[in-house]
Image (cartoon, rainbow, N blue to C red):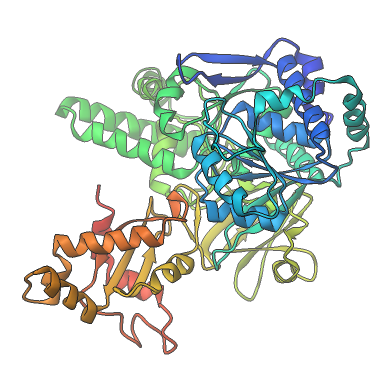
Length: 601
């Protein structure tokens, strides 16, 4: 297998596959899925590359992509690689403050934006920026600000590349491209809320392709992958690149909220996803079971138990199942399980990698039982995604999978931290020499910040060391940063942000009672106790307005969606340390009932 530099990958695949479909995307107006051949893909990438060169984008210059998933994101990435430029993705949900930080840190002069929201946020930043010079807009329906004199639509931008002389510049750059070139900088949240730019070189991606070929011989150019997670996420980015390397057709889901509609339209054989997606599937199926007739409920439960026995007690242990069980499983697989997968649109599914957050054994076991081919794994931006994942046969529940070939993992004897070394590991964080010094051991292992244990080549995750929350959607949340945003509010005395492995962020808030009581008096709000006061709808509404005001610059996934007002403050020696720092485990335990109530649907 040849591992092409990304400067030439798409063009080599176009030579091989020609008119075969490389990409599919949904027309927002008609709802039809439009096909893009490998040849058309290659032509668009080359036009993009030439336009970038004409635009003055230089070798190893940082460019930004601030968009939801669109074909233009891939044209831009591979056009940048042809120029040996560096592509820096930003989440479509990022706030102006977040993209401004990345633009300033990476020195981004040219930013590609997706739809109206991204354009509006980016133009707001550009107006006051000394660094960001121009925006290139993917969606032609975006209305430009009347004051905007520098932005250009992507289709018009491509026309800049429609000249012969600049082609030689691009071809020279492509010929000079080397594995050591920096390819992407993936910004990931730090414990203080300040993002760190993970530097990934083409050599990192090439090694990721190689070791996945070893572990995934079943993936072929006959497959169809649904690109659902944001291409900003290293999991989706590396997976999509891998699919393109294998000649897999990639269907691009632009709006995450549309996935339940688009899956039955596309019927993918492959799709990477986070646990939250499968949590919803699990909840939906069990709701259906619980509302079924007694007979249907009995059939459903028997099917699941049959699948569990066959797949987990026999197949996974490489033991031949009894004939009766095998026949019963075959029946349920073609009826109950097939119907379930058809409703979801995944009946053709062959391989669904899952990572980005912990997946409960209960949900994992259920999915395996109903014959949904998930493979749970673990990785980080700093390791070009995958460190380990479940083998097809012989996986262990409770583990996060078998370590990838070429990746070395060991456990720090002092704190149980998972340490990783290999050619897929980042060279470091952009502009962060102090962080780099702390993030690597003397013998070159990367400190993941996660604790675990190793049994042979199978890795187990035990706990997160670094002070970060990760929602069940796989997004990192820095609780202290959110808490500090609220700390200056006159009506908020104390706050504890909740969210680790939860589907959204919530908070416990202790109001500043002297001021709150004064407010209640001014508004004529009657109450007999503090408990009565914090349960008053007008008081809750007022605090909600203040919380929203403080978090307006946060991304949607970082925002506090629900909160509970406490009638008693956090106490030193219990919920607080002597230096008034939150003891989060104590807070979680003491207020467990209130916290769980916030997550009731």
